[in-house]
Image 1 (cartoon, helix red, strand yellow):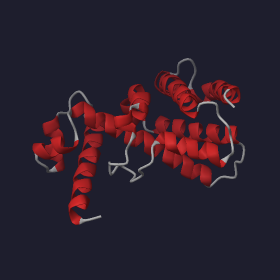
Image 2 (cartoon, rainbow, N blue to C red):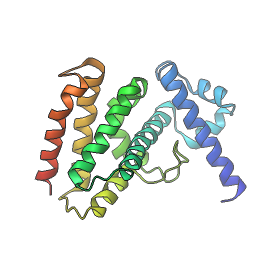
Image 3 (cartoon, rainbow, N blue to C red):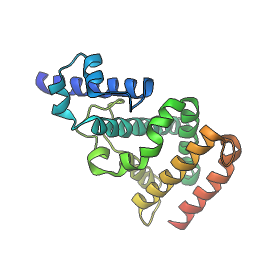
Length: 203
């Protein structure tokens, strides 16, 4: 990669990281494009080379953070000795929920936009972004790779993943922040039982 491309990716990554810091620090509603470029030390025109507006960069930050959560969980899984596919999926979900439980500010940023950020093609295709963890594969691609590695024949991997994410993000959000319907540790057995059922029905 040439210096020009390196410089472009550096600027884009700087804007993404700065937006993340501001959104989680002062809140999305109170953050402006001017705030982002001023803190990043870049011109406003540079911002609009990469992003349409504040909502566009928010969506890409959410997609990137979601991707990183999943990638970190897969790294932890790879260091484990879990062989069963269902157990692997539960391990990954448990890892992500525990991380979000420790970082409630991040949870609030991504929770209500998680599925949109992952399944909209413009957002989930991060191959042109130097995202926060420098990983260019989408969450869906990671999931399908894990399915293939385990020789699991899911009827529709995308629908299965979407359903699990919708379930985990909405119920996990309420369980972590409001202890509804139960505090997270008490709720996990119910959630995981339902997820196992979803996987069994789609194999």
